[in-house]
Image (tube, rainbow, N blue to C red):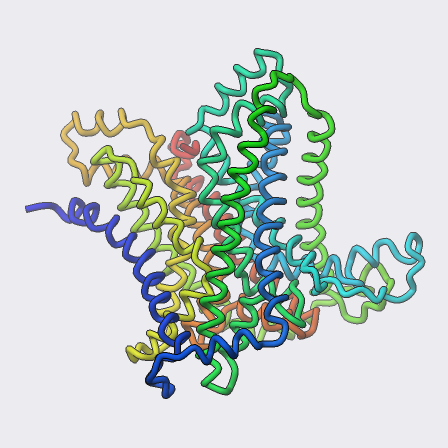
Length: 567
């Protein structure tokens, strides 16, 4: 009779696949029928194209589609360019090591908190404008500039870039060993190529195929984001995903038919952006073939290296400036423009917010811990099955891993809400936890997989030779040796859960309030001081998670220092 460990290892990959694929497939199925008029609960008993006609006549629809399409492609292109130039110019340098250490904390910053901080930094009366006025700009009053919220979506693109750069950099670091980047770089440098030219000509052709799915995930997220678009994006008209959310929340329930059609249109827009990127890949490959083979050792290394340094420095400065702006606004009482600092600072904003913070913080923590625990169990089980059977995850399963990141959440989550209503599943904490786990699991896997696979198998062979079974090897050897990567992956998963806005709002039917839903609601028109307090608390929860991930191993294994070395 198989042991509990064997049964769990056998089931974990299938449960992970089910969690990632079934909700997405069911959600898409649940949104297709109402889009064509079939929703008996609301009187839709016949298939029709009336709702598509109403959608196509919606004011500003073309502009909504254009904003979503351009935002997805522009943010992905800028993020990838920054990552590639940085890796090429500074790989194996002290700056590269320093940025690598900052990567997990930067990745843990929720999108909404980063967007709120960026809005406070770059607004006409924001921290940047105050620090330059009036001595440099001459402004005695805030300039009449629509930013953020500009009609071209520039603020939205900037907010997405500063969050997607850490994600793509993390994916690149995991992929570099797989394409033998160090060996390729050393060979090219030995032939006289400059650092950046060596990377672009010898490493990038092997690295890019491994980054294709993460890049597609970035495009899908950027073209369909809701929380960041609500904070930084234009409002008249908004992006298509925000418009779909508004139609869904309209008091007129018949608008849900049009919202379903809009959700399918959002899927089409995202697919069009992905197809455009795919075609651009083919075009660039053809155009750059001659450059790759021309033998030139240096192609603007100094100039492009300076651009890379400037872009990375600007990204870090924007994040730090956003954090400083949040802190100052949370301590501000009366802060007239162009005064650079609030005088005097006060804690009244924090004390005033304390009464309403308890429930959102508690629910966010419970949902985050539960979704992360579920994801960790499934990911560790899947990786253990891969290790025991010595079979790497197939490309098809890899695609399923990215499925929740590639399909626009507003499309399949809206369909899940429709099916939830028809099946009589009441909105509540358990439904929201499962919804968060759909998005947490891929990040946990991506954070943990490389360390799990790189663990020297000779340790397991040694334990088995001493009579230990697979379960004992797993619990007494593998998990303790992977304690640091496990806790780091858990911290990343918890941070991802804290930042989830749309699953909480839709699957909880507005009954579940977390620190993120409250912060986004306040950012859409509330008091800046209160918004800053909520955004900082939204940052504090992931920061606490990473502090525990770093501190617990040192406490538990203080007499076993070898276990503290990341695998």
